[in-house]
Image (cartoon, rainbow, N blue to C red):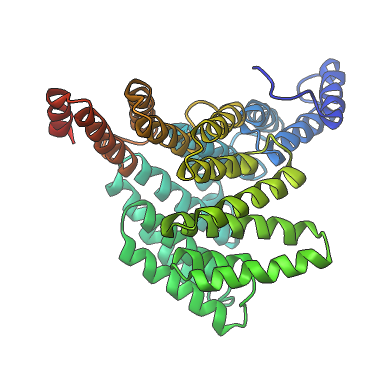
Length: 388
């Protein structure tokens, strides 16, 4: 695999440690620790494509040491499922998540929080794959379990309600999503949890942009006093939420300023090759495109594409907004061939990762129809419309 950058000195030492344990045999505990350390290094930097084969090796060795289905392997299966989801490999994510669920259900009732996480993840994966009937029972069971798990700690249920809201948003159920977000926000205020990135995230989801802007200003004042990492990264996140609103209302100059600041902060603390920095690249590209700076916007989209492909692989859902954004840029410049190429690639990949009726696929088909009609290719547009 081609590398984006030269090896980090820590990465080189970890690789050397793995190579140094090769003669000790596959079941040596020192080798397992070396593999785990290297996998943790890649995962912490968002490079899941490198982390995944190492985690598979660790799981294989631990199954040989402790036995297949041992409780010590279950958390590793859950992590592997998360990697597969981010990489767009949903069949693999479903398979290993089911294995983890089976282990935890068998071994301990006290792991109910863990089981709840498995149920939510499985429901999400199955919905994304278009298997709503199979996903439903997992979600119903998760809701029942959530009432028990979070009964003694209402603030923990905020995370659960936010997940349910995001889940509903992804499935185009905006009214239901709003219900969950408002309930989560009310719980935060009830228990005096009013100043956190979680609260501001809920306010952004609910469109309460005045509150988001107020939080950003407060964080800017804090950052002027101290260059604290947590304050800076929270500021970057909230600035990008505000950028999305500014682009909707025409505040392109402020959007560009805030997107630039957010990108600088993420590059400072994560480097130029972390997926969170790639997310900031995408927002920079969108903002530059709205400002009419098409070449600069294209450059940022391509940088993000290269980064996500390197870290997450060619099927990662994180790539979808990039291809859609590039198609929009090319369409605005009457580069219809390039726009159609991006949309066709996106449609095929999203259909493979999700399913043919997923909202992403249907939106892309709609955009393809618009592009074909702009080229006076009405027969091709009608053929797609029959599919749509």
